[in-house]
Length: 84
Ligand SMILES: [Zn+2]
Image: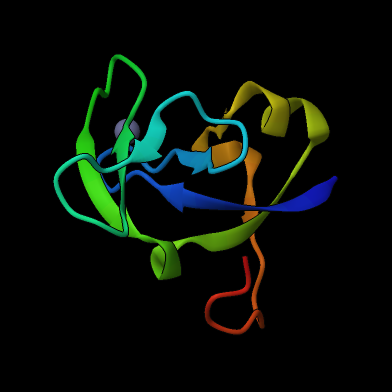
C-alpha cells in the first residue's frame, strides 16, 4: 500500500490517479485546469484544479491500473492543501 494523489469522480466515487490514469489530461479550454473522463459505464466528464486533488492510500496494483473503485481506497487525512 502506498499514498498517491488522485481526483474522485463525483458521479461514481472512483478515484483516478493523476500519475497513471488514462482519463486525466490538461484542459484544452481553461489554462491550469485538468480534465477527467471517467471510465465506462460511468463516462462522467469534469474539469478540476490541481488543489482539488487529494491523497489516497491504495495497493500498488490499483495505482498502476490508474483508478480505484470505491472499496479499494482510503482517503488520507491530515495532508495540507496542495500536497501533491
Ligand atoms: Zn465516474
